[in-house]
Length: 142
Ligand code: DQA
Image (cartoon, rainbow, N blue to C red; front, side):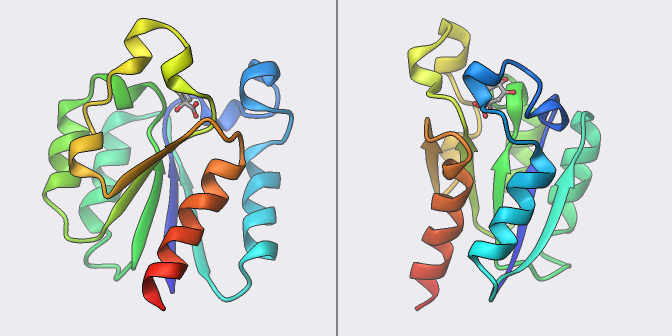
């Protein structure tokens, strides 16, 4: 199984950015923990602060033959129709993840413009939101 774990704007700051919200582990630590926990998965990890870069990456996942995408789009989740259109245009399933419980935060975070074009959404479990998303792909593949 080949999975892309893609992170959008500001998620490169995970570990130091609002640790009370996003936890104290860096993205590099979370990614290496994913590799250890799921040794049979071939992971590619991608992070960008650019909306266009994230869209460019979504556009190649079919061609690059990923079985799935675990996507934390950061704040783009809440307003990026172009990211939504990119996800809608691909065949590879995308699971939306958020570390924080977005429904318990500011109003603007309660809207996701990408949920409708994602397979599902996992929110509020800290770094374990990523683990849970990977688990759904593995279980479905059985
Ligand atoms: C986030 C939630 C978003 O609202 C926020 O903009 C982020 C991170 C999360 O993982 O909880 O950057 O996606």
